[in-house]
Image (cartoon, rainbow, N blue to C red; front, side):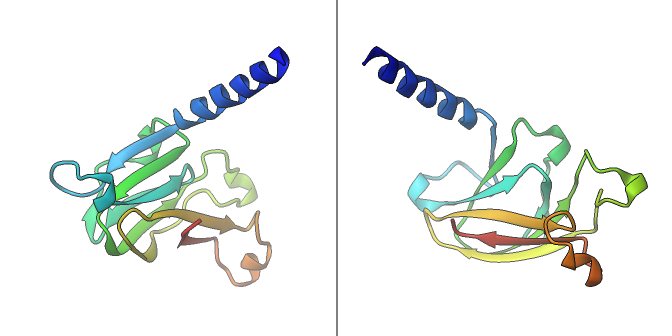
Length: 141
């Protein structure tokens, strides 16, 4: 019985520690709003949101505090300008290192959660034939 409790406690601690790898950012002007008036966008470490609705962001992927950046946003339609960056890519093998801005459109309702997802040549070799380096899109998990 003690082992089961210790195992459950260990899992909870690990899950809690995972939350510490998120970098939370308010991506709208003004004072913080209640949770029922905003939406959330989760951005994986390889993507850098450089503009939201034509307004440049003042943060950068390279100075993140965590593996996932969580943006709190106003509900509505948004256009993001995103860059893909892979600090482990090998430029000599023509791996994807950095690409131009990618426009991503999505519409969010209050309290909704969205994620940016991406694929590269490593995920989908067919993209080489289409001469695409990276695809980025928003989903509601």
